Image (cartoon, rainbow, N blue to C red; front, top):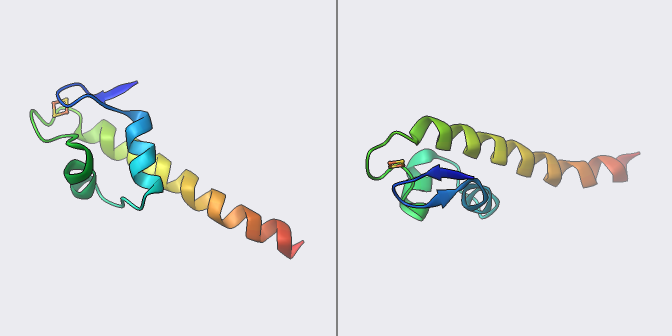
Length: 69
Ligand code: FES
C-alpha cells in the first residue's frame, strides 16, 4: 500500500527502513523521501514506522525468550 503518494513510498519500504535501523520520521524522510513534498502522509508514515519498529523489536526479543524457557 502506498503511504506517500508524492514519492511512491509503500508500507513495505517503511518496514524495510525500520528493519535497517530507521528510528524517526526525519530519518525515514531522508532514507525514503516520505513526507518530503506535501507532508500529508507524515502521520500515516509515523504510525507505520512505529508499528514496524515494534514488530522488529518483538522479533529480536522472542528468540531470547524461547531460549530462556
Ligand atoms: S504524500 Fe507524502 S509528501 Fe505528499
